Length: 338
Image (cartoon, helix red, strand yellow):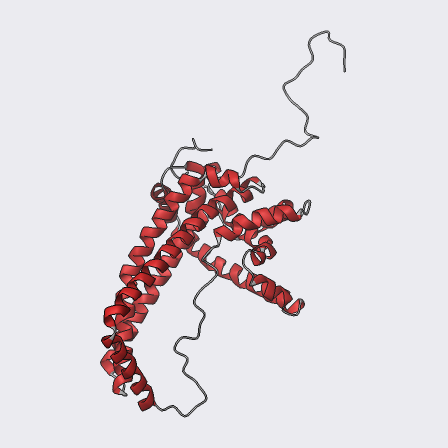
């Protein structure tokens, strides 16, 4: 597996589509999770899937900026409160600043650990799906260097994204704060804030697509080749640059798949009177319940990549059928017939 030569295979004669991988991915889910059904296998693979999704399914869903309280607070009162907050921060900056830095560093360290575990988990889940195995210790050890290389790539990518987007977010916040304190809109400020928001949105989309391609294609290539994540990305970029329209279609089709999965999850929640929804909110338990959908997502991208040639096939060859006759064994001359 590790000795496969690097370099994309010529695909000029290959017909590659986004619909064709659906059937084998569904069949793979059936064979892996239901033939036979083994609850212990579900929980083991579910742990790998939980690590592979750690820190990705959550988010900041709080209603920040929702000030629709049912009271008679007027904008001048709100500005007065904001002024008090501003004065409090200025007067206590000598201890607020060290606390803020400490909290930031703590959250940064926790986030880095989560990304590291998530990077290792992606190879653990890929190992289980590709080989139809329920293992934790072996892929954790075997793909340690792969996961570490993926972690550093994602870590640097995240830093680059933060350096690009954080100044825009800060400037937007300052513009909004000034307009709120003045109590009147500023046309120039609104235009600048809108432009910075569009820039932030564009950068966010680009980095989201990079993360998607990394998880779906670069991780399998790194799984096959070993080495560094950057080398796997260079190889994948050869595929991407050869057929950019195909991969754009892949992203659009992934949106369709995500919508279909959302409908399925909503149906399960309604069918069980929200019991399934409550269980899905429990860490790890929810991952186990959604394991067929997670395995399908992972298998779909692998079967899509498989269309680019045998150098991109992570699945082991199928064992010969028992009914297949063994060739090459001819009876010796004069030997009695069996």
